[in-house]
Length: 146
Image (cartoon, rainbow, N blue to C red; front, side, top):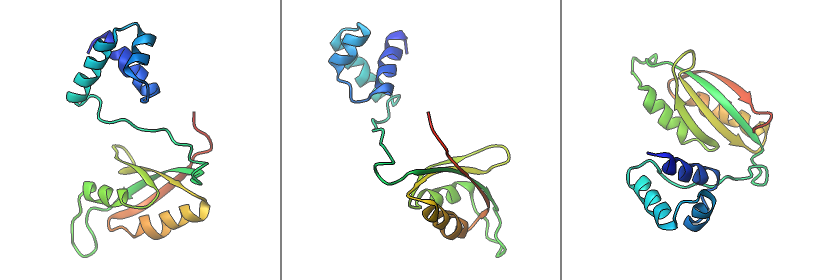
């Protein structure tokens, strides 16, 4: 990775829809060089995919929350669970956008987007807390994002 790669990646992070010619014009790097660098960065796995930035309010998903989860690895039945398996099961819940295994006082931190407080309540109380190994949760609602 050199400064040209960093410039190309910087442009793509801001807007992954930019064409190679637009990137070339904005960075001053020749179009073929931009194209070859993007292909190389994809092949190396540095660029894993391209994504869109959605307006969640227009999709009627106006509540964003972060939920910390503490887990129990041994159930009352004696069955032992892996943190990764609990995280994978959480990821399948409707509204869950991101699941992260953490260090510190929280075992798992998830990001969820839902329509309203009732839907958040359903997610946390009836779905998340019913997953084997989920012990305690703490929900934080996002007021604004920048």
